[in-house]
Picture 1 (cartoon, rainbow, N blue to C red):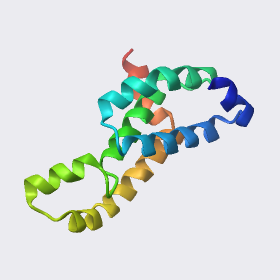
Picture 2 (spheres, rainbow, N blue to C red):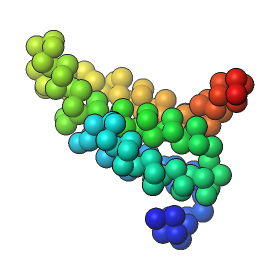
Picture 3 (cartoon, rainbow, N blue to C red):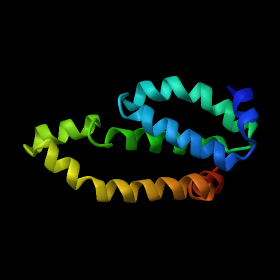
Picture 4 (spheres, rainbow, N blue to C red):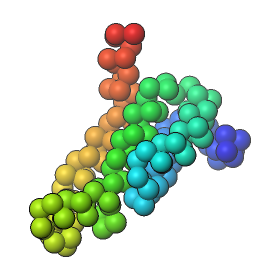
Length: 125
């Protein structure tokens, strides 16, 4: 996979964009814990080969997979919220879009400004 991605592009920013898209799509049907076990051993070496900090890629992976859980209309968390609050899925799916777009902006900031996720670990370790 590392070879295939390196043939595709050598830009870490484009690779991070591809990883974000892949993980958002993967996070929709899969729960976070199994998805972490599946993708981390594959994506960590790819990130290391591009010089991406391991803490940074870990935060990006976790944030992507969690966002997948609230992606309408299939997100598993949406069904749990509907069950707890007795809201209809239609109403909740309409209401979730504004916070979801804000979360995507935060994901983009964390992805392309690595110091946001690595500042505290570097300061205290």
